Amino acid sequence: MGLKEEIIEKRREMIVDSYPMSIGEIVNLYKDGELNVHPEFQRFFRWDEEQKTKLIESILLGIPIPPIFVSQKLNGIWDVIDGQQRLSTILQFMQVLKDDRGVDAEPLVLMGTKFLPSLKNVIWNNENLFSSEQKINFKREKLNFTIIKETSEQDLSKYEMFQRLNTGGTHLSAQEIRNCLMLMINKSVYELINELHDNEFFKTCRPITDKQLEEQYDLELIVRFLLYVFFPNDFLINIDKSRSMDLLLTEELEKYAVNIGNTEIQNIKGKFNRIFTLLSEVLGEDVFKKYSKDEDKFKGAVLIAAFEAIIPGVFLYLEYWELHKSALKSKIKDLYNEEAFNTAVVRGTRPVDRMAQLIMFSRDWFRNEN
Image 1: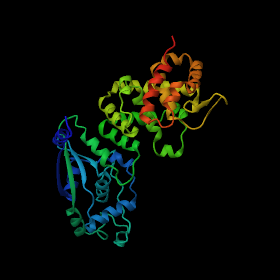
Image 2: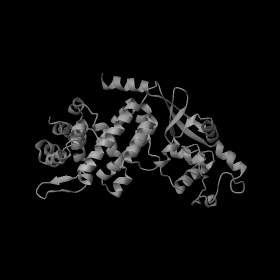
Image 3: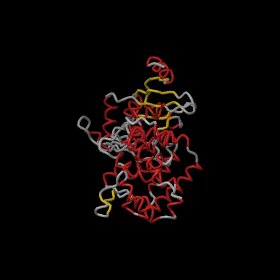
Image 4: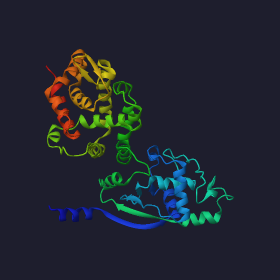
């Protein structure tokens, strides 16, 4: 199939419509449960009171704001894929927003601005500060919507659109985008990742900086764990080594979330706990640091290459290494002198190429010796 045919085919799959809708109509859709703004995303989209006030000010002044992108499910429900923070701010100002537990959100108290200093302390339900006439005019203001219509139960186009469009007005890390995707695709996987994140043995094994914690690097390590232990060797051999690691992790996690069931989730919880209990006991916070044979000690920060070289093989032969802890400690120390490991981590190797090499190395290096 050539480029022309590919474009035609994909354009047929993307059924898109656009039209303006009044804020009053939007509120009614929300109250009737026909508009899902994902209130659970508020932990990722970090608009402050000033940003929220500027949005309300823009609406009052008739300043255009970017269109809202929604995915229309087969049952007609609109799922917001770009514009959660804008819609949540409007709904919060109008005092109809519920949080992810169904509890009324705190009323939005506006700040004074350069153009509208009298907005200071304005709230929706205060007739002295925001009159009935002003409320009616506000509800009649229109927002532009772009609607992507799902064509099947397994239509993943909205997740692709979410990745491309959704920044919520604030830069999100790659892992925060993945968190949002998991909430949209399979909340059980999101809950799994966060439960594993609280594992005390895992915390012991991954001493990372405050900046890395803020960027949710610890959650990314868990995503890598979930994917690395299941990547088949033929997938790793044929992988496109020019791919971005962030995109690969995101796209493969999407597939993982679509296909995993509750039984597999329970199994992975148990195996994760066993692995990090073992690694914590054997080497603790040193387990993913580089070992220097000359100095006979582990040095430096957590190495992602060490994570890639240890986790897949230990996962595969866990029962053996649980019975041979001293040998496991030596095995981890010795891997840094192996040619296959050092070839994979040579400067200039692309991250996806390094990952593929080290996962296969790990499965061979930690193979059950009996």
